[in-house]
Length: 489
Image 1 (cartoon, rainbow, N blue to C red):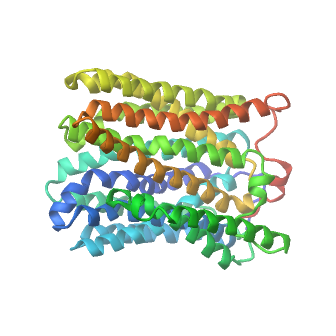
Image 2 (cartoon, helix red, strand yellow):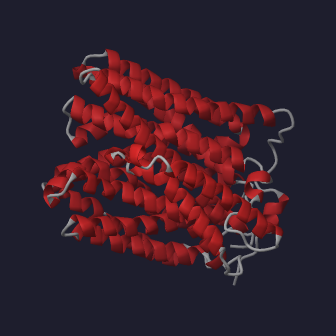
């Protein structure tokens, strides 16, 4: 029997931890594999371009699946989609670990990316469904910490596994998902709420095709950047933009005719804070995602660090992000967008100072001098990702929470793809121009990432100033429109 809307699920916090563990695994797999690419290339006797698809194929499949999977969860039940996607993720993780050759490994990673992209939007949607009021802010705080920390600790975890497991250690990067995923699957089956689906089980196939084609066209040159994709396939950018414009027009047409669009146009035009938060998140992830590859290149190739030591060098950022995100979830309802503004200033100061220190300080002590600045940057980042997710999704009606969460994460993945293509590319260009001056290359690349964050800060400041005069800080995060649909899945 479905529980009344005003009665919280007594198992909601335990259910949340199950979804966060599963979400952490899928997001960790975006960055954890990068440190293992050299050993994969050597173990499978393949080319750098082929092994790069182990990372880029996963990211591409992940981004392509998010919105459609969120809409499927809204229509057919989030619990069902979550469990099926988690089971598939575990299965394809095992397949990737056991792959005898690069072709099967890439195929397993593509399938793993589809499973991860299907699981991810159910996390934010289940928070919308399970929590109300101040509890929702705290839950989104933990979710934001998961998003931020999973990206930051990937190099550390990957380096640790490689150090412990030996020459074939890259396989354990995938195998480790199996026991954790199976445990989460059992607990999810027991704890996740059984709620009747909120949709009529109908999808928008034309919208699915247009959105998928548009995202593919925009992302493909970026994920192939290391192999010359930006110069060979640049023409896909305007094609993708035109297809995405066609998608937006089609969705408005479906909505006007009373149909069920893949992504409700009202999310961007009528839902308070959604458009601003989605744009801010995409801009922030341009700088946030790109700097990790730059740091790895600097510490490993420039200073000769092992993968594990390279990961440990940026650990202060991950620690600061985890602590701040959990605290920020409790402050977001009181401070609102001001919290994001302060967080962006802190992360820009932290990373900007890190860039200067790595440029000016001798190599032997560079990591030690940069640690306090990275900690400040992490504290700032925790006040950006977590509160922005809360403010972007808190007024979204529960019936469309999956699609809305999927679209938000799609923007983050697109921003991340731009950053991971542009910042390492700038790093290599600077190396060539300066006769391999790694210190100047890392400073310029990280500084460019900070410039992208400045664009996000501009959006945040404008939103903060716009909301200040008439803002009611005591109102609950759900609007009356949200309560109308609170019992729907």
